[in-house]
Amino acid sequence: LRASSVHNRVVLVTDAQTLCWPEGKLPRNIHIVSLAQLEKKKALPLRAFRDSYWRAGRLTPCNPWERHNHERFFILEQLMWDLHLEHVFYADGDVAVTAPIHLGMLPAGCDALVALRGIEKDAPHPLAWSVWAGSAILSRALLGDLCKFALDVFDEPYTCAMRLKAARTTAYSYMNDMVFWSMFVAASSRNAPPPLLPGTNQRAFCDAADANIDTMGVASSGRYQFEAKTIRAWDSGAPMRTLHFQGRSKDCACKRLE
Image 1: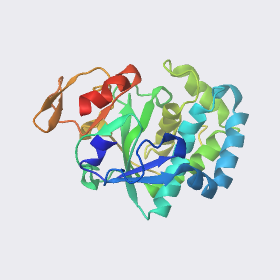
Image 2: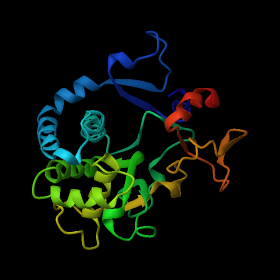
Image 3: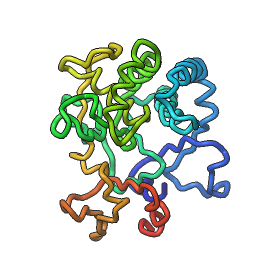
């Protein structure tokens, strides 16, 4: 959080148990928003989503964490309404933002900047896609579409499409948020969307990797170096705007970023 707040205003959505600064010692550019209050405002759609999520049965794991990964985008939409934001850069808790983030990073004609893993060039069939929104520029309008899509797609008759998706995605045998996002991108495509998906507004998505967002494990593999005030990927030499510390790399993140 300290690293991310050097160049950017950071809004931390959390509960009281995760606060780690003494009162009055919060860094200047970090603002705390209560998760419980946002959940209360979004109670009705969240309840409807949870009902349909559990009805999806074997498409979803038994623990609540994957469900929370879906719900965070309901919460994010509510936060944007509360703060009167049209666009936001969203980052998972294990992402450090190492450079200024601005709307100019979003290419003309694009509605969102997400990690398009395997889209088209690597896996031409939509059921083999995987999309990660853990470091993404998103609009409030798009999140509204996403939340409605979530309420639709976890209910019949669309669960049959999700079973096909889970079977074809070898890395994820259940409906995690990356599988879900890939279905949303497919349904939003300006080309003909796959059958058996609910309708949604047409959107254009661009790849966050093209904006030097760490989407493929630069941080977790340690493939980066510090040059003065710039962090560069070893492989490409590109200046990184974010670092995504996955798995055990979280243990050394703070030390590396000090």
